Amino acid sequence: MRGLMPQDDEPAPETDQERRAFRAALAARRERLAYASRAFALALFGIVAAAVLLRLPESWWVPAVGFVALAGLLFRLANWKCPACGERLPTRGGRVCRGCGAPIDESSEEAR
Image 1: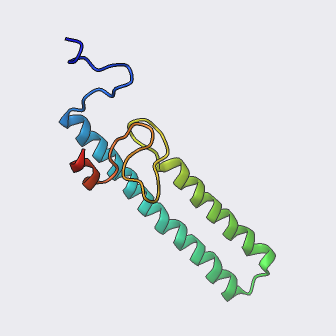
Image 2 (image 1 turned 180 degrees about the horizontal axis):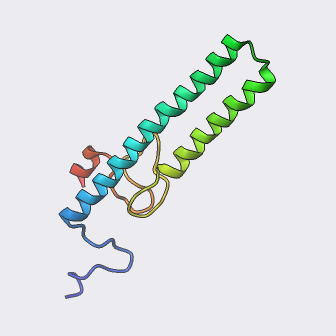
Image 3 (image 1 turned 30 degrees about the horizontal axis):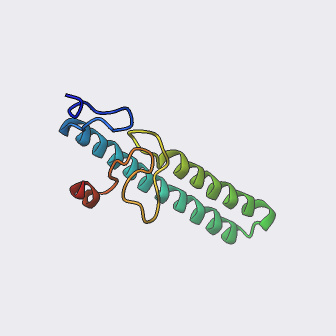
């Protein structure tokens, strides 16, 4: 009977409903990240274009560009977390969450 029960250090088996919910939450985070990336890029482009066209001094618009870039980075750090455990997800070269081992992309989920 001991072999059938998960141990304390083993993750509980996932159900199809939990996997679908995880994939949906991860897709929502990816979509939010894509929209935010476009919005931050548009804001950066708009600030630089307005500064060049209006011939504003660099002391006015360079801090604004830095602020928007920093805000974009902070949004990415806050948003790109595992829906299951809350650990930051790898941005390059990672196919699974480092915290709980949940697959991030479809190819790693099939291998699991």
